[in-house]
Image (cartoon, rainbow, N blue to C red):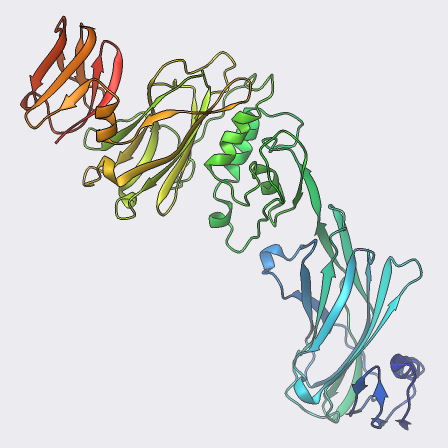
Length: 509
């Protein structure tokens, strides 16, 4: 039986007619489309549908094209997503037709399509029908090779790519579901044309929309405590650990304790660990936890870590290596504080020798340290969840620990930021010493070519010098306002000098 279509007002009247005849066992030798204009598509197709021969193993499936397989389970608001429709276990495929339905159409919109393996000779027909109420859409799809039904190179063809967009108004934690109806593929097997039904499993995609983020509340329990620190730690170095996964900056981000609109990241839980809203998870986010600490924060046991990951959240190492080089960061203050954050630039030829950051004597053994070594800098946060803890004096806030084969000097280091947070949640600038020259200007110590001179307006009672491991190397009781000793009495390198309980960095070259 041959059918000629020269004027089709509805593109899928043909597809339905074909399916009707197949369902009723009517044999069709060929169907010839004459040239006509249909929805701005000019079509020249010769195809054949022959007798029914059912095979149960043939199927059609969706293959995401906008993301890799690790992220194929969700779609994201404001972004396009797409998939290919691929037939499995069908050789010599000539054409296919099916109905694709999807829901949540108020927020997910069909955008466009492109024919795949059938190429320039093939033709694609798509008729979009929005169901009354607007929550469901039907796409009737026909994909034709443009060739007679015979042996060809189209085995398991990739038929078509479909694209969709998720609107900005799409709520988070909803989904969009795709399902097939009346899926058939035409094949030429053993000299016989066959119209073969295609099985297809429904596919569900979760929708990542916009959510409200409270800076510091990374576990979403309504308050900020040391558990939030732990959650931030679990998501540290998000982009390095999950290559290709997307993160999103918040619009007009702030660290203030208020709800802020944020687009859910590809790794959903990490969205809430971005406490400062910059699209990264770094040492700064740990500081925001301290900044927004609630009244009962610290009422539970402090977090502890055992990480083998290089430069990812290592905490203080109590084992001291006397061959390592430690450069102290000395801080003074005008207000008591319980947490601090620092950003330190390091010469890019020397930063590879930076082993870690260690807590200074201003913090105690229960205090927490987190640092992030980057290509040309290191950021770190140190703080304590004990409500009774505060830093009340000047001293060494942290040490930068380099390998002993490093020729790093203080001139290779520039401290860009050093801040503290007080118990009333105020940020304060900490005064720092970040070079030997600055140390000289801000202390009573004068390092000369052969001697170290100390001049004070008050009586100097005790002078002690320690190496980076805390071993005492030198001690004197001047009981005068001036004191001098020969540099040959102390070893070369980075040392600490204590003058009546006040500690200063000392470099003996």
